[in-house]
Amino acid sequence: MSQSIRNGLSTVPELDDVQFNRWQGLLEERTGMFLPQQRRSFLQTSLGLRMLELGIRDYGEYYEKIQDGPSGVMEWSTLVDRLTVQETRFFRDPDALQLVVEHMRRQRPRLQAREETMEFWSVGCSSGEEAYTLAMLAEENLASTGLKYSITGTDISTIVLRKARSGRYPLRALERIPVEYHNWAIAPLSSQQVEVAAQLRRRCCFSQVNILNLKNCPLQSQHVIFCQNVLIYFRRWRRREILDALAQRLAPGGLLVIGLGEMVDWEHPLLESVHSGQVTAFVRKQSTSTGESARR
Image (tube, rainbow, N blue to C red; front, side, top):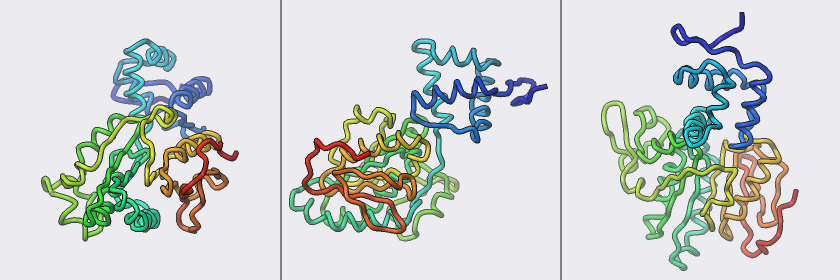
């Protein structure tokens, strides 16, 4: 008897090799995410639970539903939310954040002279903790000098984006936020929930973006692009494509931060590597022809 996912009296059959390859291919085609064999149980559980909710017991039937017109588009969106939600937290990588702070301070005089707004982009922002962390650092290091800033968080999942827009988090989130930010950056809502302060929420916006379609993303001339713990879900050739697109969206002098070890052999003619043993980052050169293509 085959193994199954159980929910009361309902069951969903095991995801066999053929079905796994079929769903693995669809996910990669539409989102770029690659699920290796080691994550088969994750895919089976995610598909199975959703199928049980819909009263579907066959993977093929559910696959056809995903392909069926407008209703299939809506169902696909629901499934993607289940498959792409990632864990995140405030102040996740102190070394990378310190690099961002140093970059802010270096860029501050030039942007003040031009009366420019400093633009930040959190790629794969999930439920918003990373974007609001950047907002806290910008508020502390830029706002006091009169320099304006703006944070954009993007993700493919509509569910996490709704949470990000609310700016509300469980009380335990405070454990990750340095004490010096508690009084002005976070407001208590109840004994179990806190809210990011209004002046920070006003500086942040959140949009749904499929990282495979960055050519359609309107964001340009970003001063900081933070893209950590995103590339690990993609094949290496796809990581290069994503990074090439992000490089084009940096302002001259802008900073691109990725996860340590996520892409160790990538370079781009517009960028220079930041020499650091703790952070993988790049700075866009002040004057380089934008027509050059990335080195492969």
